[in-house]
Length: 261
Image (cartoon, rainbow, N blue to C red; front, side, top):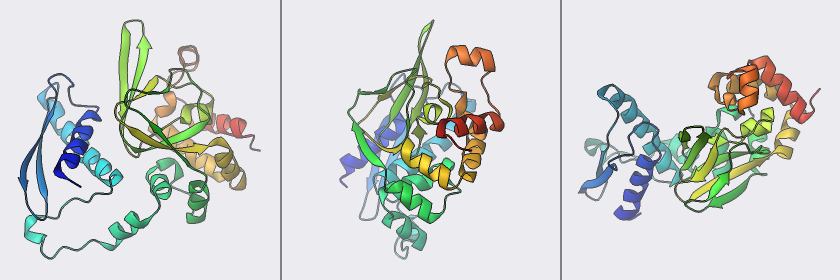
């Protein structure tokens, strides 16, 4: 890939950060270029010094995820460049089909067997969204799970004081679980900040998986309860039940949604 293309990926990394300040736009500069690597410098601002470390760690994670999405590898250290070879696990991961690599990245599916992952991957449908396009409006009850393959999505919520930014989603992140597993609407409107590719996991495919092996529902409930993202509910429900839900409540909702015994 040309340096300009990688520079744009680095800009996308900065756009997808949840911690750096959007005011005074962050910058990307090429510092050096040789036959083995391109060195970049990313400059950004945070609210205060105490947030700098967390923002830096977040950017390391985002760089890794966006580069993997673009099928690019980080260069080895200069002193090791001459002898460095791709590690076997890196080669194996890169050779897996896109849908399988996405399933590997989602904690909800960590307990699936390889056959179950392949079965689910075979049903996944890629969808694309243009920059600025709305993916889902606030309150929409989605009936599929969507895993981000490439790009950045912005989640905003309308409140009395105006519009509030909730999160920015990057490759490997997912959304739609609120409607799919608990019957709730999305906590905010989802809009594409860049050209974005997502893979859709349909309700029917997940339903078949859960009926074939009901214990997966327990694993999903545990992941959702630990993650806390299931707190994305509408105002009335949130006021009535609170912003967090126990694993048993999630299990009941998943059983009901998928008609499990």
